[in-house]
Image (cartoon, rainbow, N blue to C red):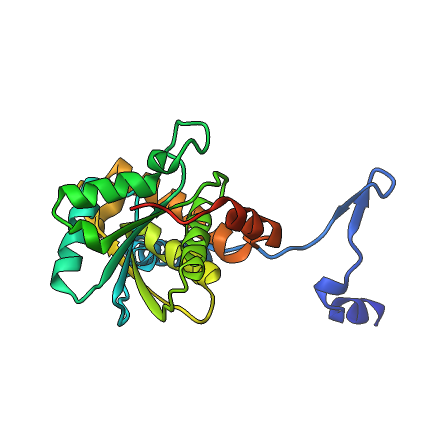
Length: 252
């Protein structure tokens, strides 16, 4: 009778086997079977394929809005500058603004002409953009949040020149686009609608970016940068005030 009762006790409720004066326990545990491992591996492969296909179009977003102002990030390469000129000519933009802080390698702000905003403006004029439609707005603060600082400088320029702006389209390079739009929206505020235009890199096929070292490097770097900007970046009031103090009306 006792044996019958004992055998009816569920195995999971049985006392664990102990050894070495109770230092070690041996307990029953669950593990994946070969079928379970196959299901998990298939799910991981599917997720990986979706990431490979989806991460580039997610980062390199293009979403124009109805705007008569085109903003060009001055650090972009010349192929993107040419695309900016084409964008200006094929749409009804009244003004083009270039943004950007001190040129990398200068060690900090020297003057407005040693900024990405100035370099970008010169390249736009080289490729035929009318000088009277062009305005550079340099950022004079070099820190880790350069895109946000450039957007703050643009916001301050609008305010200092009593320019009422309802919407802008910002042009940048492919995978930088989503982060650029996010930071410009943070800096310009809810009163200004921000559109974004991503210029694809001609050096590799965006549909198969994982086959190219440049593509892998840019996707990984921009993915990390976007996650930081989206979830961990909180612009301080002091940073914005510093930018406002150091940014004066720029010359064309």
